[in-house]
Image (tube, rainbow, N blue to C red; front, side, top):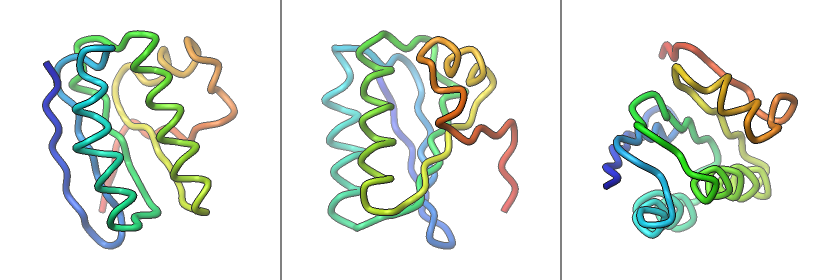
Length: 105
């Protein structure tokens, strides 16, 4: 199961994911996150994966697709969460993503 909470503040969409991001929940991610970004033309996205219990290879690929989608519109994509450093090294994104331990607005 995947639960998505979103908040749009000061031109930035903050997305918090809870549960599992895998082949069974990717459709939820696409509908609740990616479609909103496309329809609203959002250029700045902070994806918080701190509350994910697990991310499958398909989930990692979906995060990469989201990153490319945002950057294609000359936007910025940020990944946030406690296990992000491990996730980055797993998917070879060390030099591709800006990572934050904490977000302050």
